[in-house]
Image 1 (cartoon, rainbow, N blue to C red):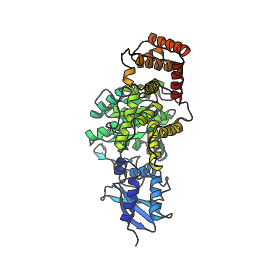
Image 2: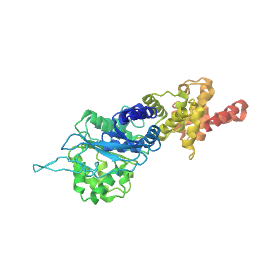
Image 3: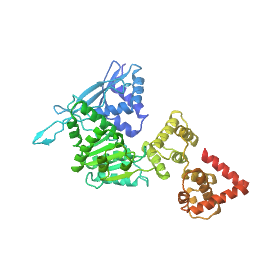
Image 4: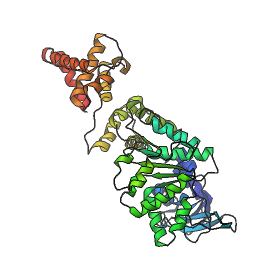
Length: 479
């Protein structure tokens, strides 16, 4: 007996559900409806063009594998996309594409009627997020729901940026933080925070038009507008946004025409009390290849940086992700991850996912040894940075004492000796100043650190047992 299209899709969903987290499944697969199954081609209906593109971009391999498992090697998937238009109710538009083809439809220069009143007349403004020839589609904010304030871990490294972002989300365009420019090295959370601002605005002000767009995407849309001779419509569309979030503005460096068009959009939005949120890999003063008039406007509001997270924040980030995914992991493995990857949150989360995948696929227990195997793959091309936190952790584990003890004011002999060893290795194995080492090792001054180093060196020369301690700890730190 042949399977029905509903049965095939239900079987696919059962497989998909086991391979992605609950939130992703609810967001991207529950809204899908199967329509028909003919000649080994399953047609599914998705809510929008953006929805289709997201599936093809992020879940293509999973879809391809699942469809072939259900329908055989000749199985294919087609999408029926609901397009809303002004003449009828929601009507589908079908894209016929095998699941292995990611470039079936180019992202485009699209057309959506939006009314703006000018001399009492209304005009249709092309929306650069819609395919030509289609009457209308919902404006997609392009926000990722999982990038919320709730999932953003606050620490000393990002408190100013997070607080400013939350203030903007509560009162967009009305605070002195306009524009709000968030800058940091890659992988430290500026994209997450910018999405969180947009999501919070949509929650607080459902009627406001919020749009997240990368600078690269903005540039390609402008190029299409020039090619199609509708630059004015392109500008008018962007001038209607209430909260515009531009990610990676540094990508516009050297693009004079695109910068000029963005300048006019920026001026219009700012003068009309609309909110701008901009992210960059550098502060305005260090941005190269940008027009001076744009840079001066970036300085009108607040520039807030996101720094490398400290140990506690890194651990909190890992614990939050595990909690959201409903997964448990031994505390010592979480700490090892946090100690090992210190400068990039994205890499930290990637290593976590790799460990979970390796454990699940190969039915291995999650242990420190498994974590070390995964970490080696992430840092194999660069020497892993040894931090003061990590040194303290190794020393404390070696002597079986609590981390809080080494940073306390106690003068117990074993604690003092462990603290001195932590200072000694921190001076030898990190680039930190004596003052920084002292601050992180019990809030001591640089003179105390020098005294600790001299004491350890003297003991190494006179006490063989102590020297063996030092050699063993050094090996553990370098593992």
